[in-house]
Amino acid sequence: MKQKFIFLTILFAVVATTFISAQNDRTISIQGILREASGIAVEDGNYTLEFNIYHDPTNMDSKWNETHTDVPVKNGLYTVYLGEITAIPVAVFDTVNVAYVGVTIGGSEMTPRIKMTHAPFTYAAHSVTCSGAVGDVKYSILDPTQFAAQNGDCWVAMNGGDISGSALAAITGMTNSPDASGLFLRAHEYNEAYDNDRTTASPIATVQTEAFKEHDHYINLWTSYNTALNSSYTAKYFDNYPASHGAGGNGFQQAQNVSNRTINPSDTNHRHSVVGDTDMTGGTETRPDNLNLYIYIRIN
Image (cartoon, rainbow, N blue to C red; front, side, top):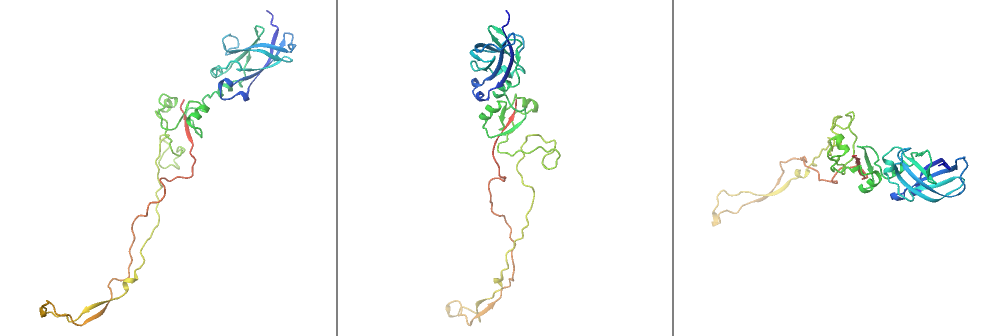
């Protein structure tokens, strides 16, 4: 049967306005020009067009199919949104590097099939194909569930969880992710210039406990001189205290000649050194101003 139409041009573009989170709402805009075999554009009107997506330019193993009826064609030009009727599975694009579209009209598929450009493959990328590479680390304000929805489930929080069986475990021998809970990240020591407690051979992703650099503070404390000890004082003395006693039957004779005497202490002006500890002050840790974020690592 002689083919009445030729398929001259086809253009693809991912329609951003319909490219939203629900998979069934993602579509691919396709524009084509239908001409008769003579090269003249087909008559204006509505046509029924069947669309197939293949992984091969010639075999008939269709990976997806839908039919659009009453497609308006003007001057041979039409526009259709693939996936508008039947959702396009993500696997149509993420398992191959190239795909082909076939358009059938009047029972005959136009030839040759048109190789799809890179734009439709962003369809699969939007379906959350894992971003980054194994071993990459990312900061994010998204919690683990939100982060996986945007970056893929090949990422895990750096919380010390089990990663055995992952690609990262196979590469590094790790069975658990590094636990970065509450920690600041520090670059590995490449030339042994700054991190004195690590070397270029130190294991990666290991915790270094807190420390203060050794230092001292000058202090010189003494009490002030106590000049009050130089002051004299007066005491009462009893003169002529008899050696004999027992007179009068009371065991002692009455003391005679009570007098006042001035006493100068023998302790001279002096001071004391002060030794001890200051009171505790401050919080529970030493830290700079900081902002807390989630930290993730790609394991697959």
